[in-house]
Image (cartoon, rainbow, N blue to C red; front, side, top):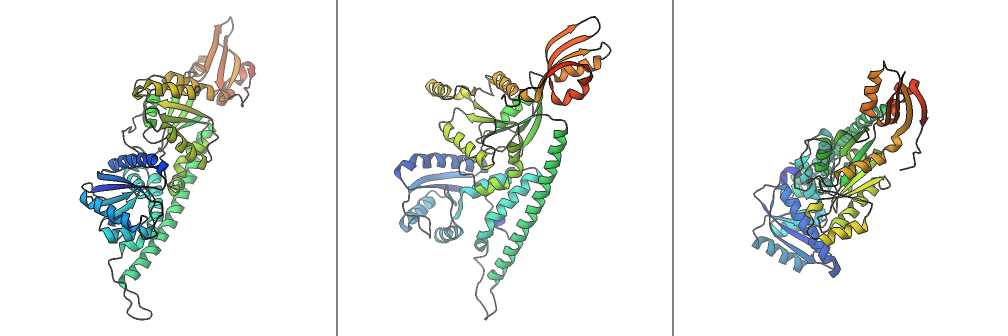
Amino acid sequence: MSISDEKKLDKDNTAFLVGVYKKNDEKEECDQLLEELEELMDTMGVEVAGKKAIRNQKPSARFLLTSGKAEELFHNAMEAQAGILVFDADISPSQQRNMERESGLTVIDRREVILEIFSQRATTREARLQIDLARSEYDLPRLARAWNHLSRQRGGANMKGEGERQFELDRRMVRSRISQLQKELEKVRSQRATQRKQRRKKPVPNAAIVGYTNAGKSSLLNCLTDADILADDKLFATLDPTTRRITLSNNQDLLLTDTVGFIRKLPHDLVEAFKATLEETVVADFLIHVVDASDPDALQQMETTFKVLNELEAGTKKTIIAFNKIDQVEHTATLASLRSAYPDCIFMSVKSGQGIEQLQERMCELIEHTLFDVELHIPFDRFDLMALIHRQCHIHVEKYEDDFIYVNCSAPTDMKNEIKDYIINDTLPNTNSC
């Protein structure tokens, strides 16, 4: 019996959500996080019967809340006919056990909700390995809950009850599972590094789309590359990274990767578990940080994304900040304020197409350092080379002379071998110009 099996959440169950804050000025943020937790429960397919923000100045080791507030909370949840009590705060294994024993309800926290959603939505082998690892590490200190119904009576000085024996067996199994998953993930990381090295043999610049979950990252990738990946209006609609090739207006190719969305209170162990996926942000030439301009909490979501990027050591990457969904902003003053505060950012709507052209222009600017300006004399019998130049270079001047074709263009560095015999002048760009 595993923790996952014991606590598998049925869609017919209903949940009562609990937010905990210490000071009065934390109440507003607590309410916002409860709304977000409600969206997470909707994504998971569980109905919310009620929610409550509780001020708790002195956390209790037994229930997290004081005994009186805990008793009141259990009564509220039962009145709402909820079968699951969901805390937005982290709760310890002992607090979880105590509350379940006292209330008769299933008690989980935000971390377990996120783990459950990730378990439902991961599709690739890599993502499943990462989820299994995070789940196993979460379950290990909670194994006692799975066997508290069995006898723990000792039959003698060296005899152990059935529950205790099973608990120790399970603990060894989970630890062995964690070790095996870590080894398998190392293999995945090695394979990804090899694949990345193969891509780098023909140096195509790459960018990673990052941002808060449900900001429109997958929709942007679909818009720019005609991809057909899921872009649902739910938190964590997609987990697995998707990479597509795009040809920009300067004829330069770019690899564009959609990454998993971030969220406030994203458990640190999940960030660690997903580093194999999120490392695309580390190796990218630049990032496109998508922000939902229509969300009242957009600036806080930006800060959350920056925080996770810093954890990944990608916080200093060149970044295009793109405010999406500007057509859904309710008040023009809000949009005007954002434009004033962030004049160098892109304001766009993936849905209407507004601002997409400006985004592509900015992307061209950020990969200019991968091009070099060159003048060429191409013989008339090398129309195959002219076709390649038209496909991969940004042509400034093309003139047909008596004995050759004169071309002034910006060419990608990986083309230098093909055109080196026809170069009459070239200027390598300053790589720090961007």
